[in-house]
Image 1 (cartoon, rainbow, N blue to C red):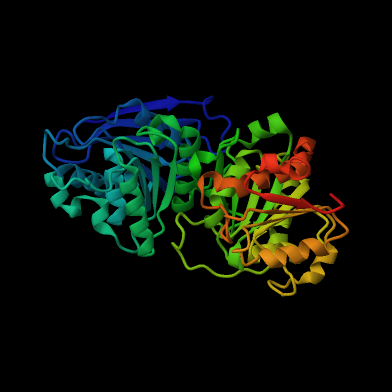
Image 2 (image 1 turned 60 degrees about the horizontal axis):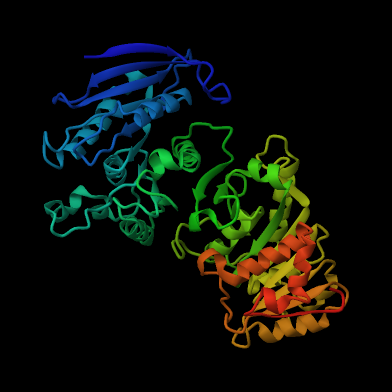
Length: 525
């Protein structure tokens, strides 16, 4: 049985450049022999007969309940059709009708059916993605790990049963964890960190294992429960899905400048939930910024910019992401060297040239002046700072003469008499703005060099803050980046947001503000 309905929807999506005026919905199309094996189809109505990418939507419900008619799946069916995809929402045999793995077999059959009927529905069979939540997330991932679709998204997906007393646990072939291998279809997982139904540690374990074999599963994990990708955090998860499908199904989305998102520490502890993004036009960097920049700008004015260089001069900021997320959540846009990583060491890491900080400055300056950019009128390029840890601190000093920089943060670093990353003590003469050194006590290998630099700086305001217990690694791996992150924010607020009350934190009241720190300043401060 099939039932065709023609919908005219002209107002809900008028803001989207890719929105279609009409879509055609065909309900209850039989794709398998059992009565449960039916699907709904939503097709854009257009004179353009070019085959379109498709998205398969799979409902949840613990494999024993749920239906494609549930509101969230109906909304997805219509939403993605309005964006130009051909969408299919499928039902499958529930466990009280047929035991596991019947549901897996059914969704596999639905994809095979879509491919065999691709010309009838205007689908490009080489560009089919899928999404499911909970049990549907498990079924979506099964399509992905078996390479039956182009890409797969799973919201709160059970990757394994994780209970040896459950007979389903004896069948790894029924679970994504049974397919840890390289070159599966690209996968995006959306997981709430407080999910009481699908244990986040099992999802973490699956993603870690996939990364170890070289399969780059994208993973968004943030504060939330089982409904994280269902109806709780749609302002985060839906744009991430849009970008993921656009990236892998090659469907143009002019409004999306980024293609990968990550959330750390629930978005930080500041007033603005922060995200980490991989921008299409800046692939070798990560942008940490408030998710809703417009709201932050409305409350604070244009956002200052922090450029960040990593320890070892390496091409990853993953070891500093807790600090950088915290900074962004307090109203900053951070441009950090290095391609995005989901987990540390999930790819080969390489050293970077010091010129990449200038590349970051050039990019954000260009974006800020481009009326077509999401950063236009959002960032204040007259208020830019540069920070770097260890070798990254040397990269900051290499760029010291750049007049666009209004302050410097040298973290567990210093030149002393050595040369590193193209920088030496000669670069101290190029300083033209206030600078702060932050070290971790005498066990920090940078401690003596930082002390020598501090004594040598005469022409600009300088502060040396030392935490004797922190060592060379600082507190960057602590929640929200620990005390190093808080001191960095206080310094940035003083220098870039002119919060003059912070002056005393680094001068007369330093011991009160930072009980674990010894803070010294030169005569210029």
